[in-house]
Length: 387
Ligand SMILES: [Zn+2]
Image (cartoon, rainbow, N blue to C red; front, side, top):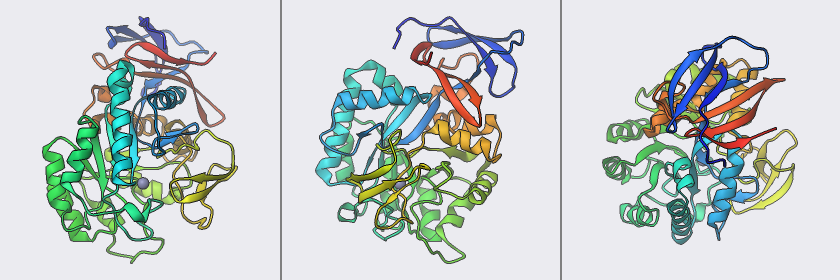
């Protein structure tokens, strides 16, 4: 990363389509003014904010031992994808393994100020999820358990207080009390990998649950037509929702309905795993054993091809997908992957391309239905640049 701060970035505003010059001072956008149109101007937008990153480019955040160097190289690879903030995601595992992963991530952040700026917190997905096949997804059934506040506090200590989001299922009897305690201590709670009933979901929302994690995935292959936990979460106005927009996790018709229903509350997550950015083939992973990555970019369990094992697409690719399929336009798709998740976490980046917002920017072009990142900028400094 270049430590010198840029003073000026020019590009086409992703929201208005107008050519603008963004003036930067002390890591913030000082002013934005219109400039004359020229043909070779790239596009300009706030950097991506990813609430769910399990790994990338061969690095698995849930495979121990994990090192600070691994976290840093993963972060670096994400810069090339336009990501300026993300939540490393620690999933269902043994108590000790979860604790160690959290400890390593927290220690790495403490030692590297740059990581601290990129990683505003940690997402704990599991182990307090549904034990049922289907909702449990590819999480290891041996370690799924009911919410346990004492255990969570131990983990939060190991994480130096950095667990910012917990995904759980409110089907456990103690879930409501647990959610209230999380919310009281500033931890956001998402419903996910759940088989909860209508009243359990409503109670979770009353207790402060504020998000559905990858809505429509981590679910039974067959569900009662209604009621069911997808309708219940979809209809719940208090719940924002993340969805995996890679073209494999949700059919276009479902994405379309979710987008129409959730509107400004719809967000994208990558849910990307270590095989993201990798070659097609068969792989052995700690999550669910053998997996297959198809040439089309679908990742599934080898023995049960109907079960997906995470995504290999980044937010850049999901945004490209939504636009290509005309599920939404550029500004909406981009906001779903940047300012909305930033707002959900309470980050200053929620203001996007506006005076006073942090100069966290992605400079990109759109060619053949694909967004290509040229520059990623954090607080005015260049994190990544492609020739
Ligand atoms: Zn999941």
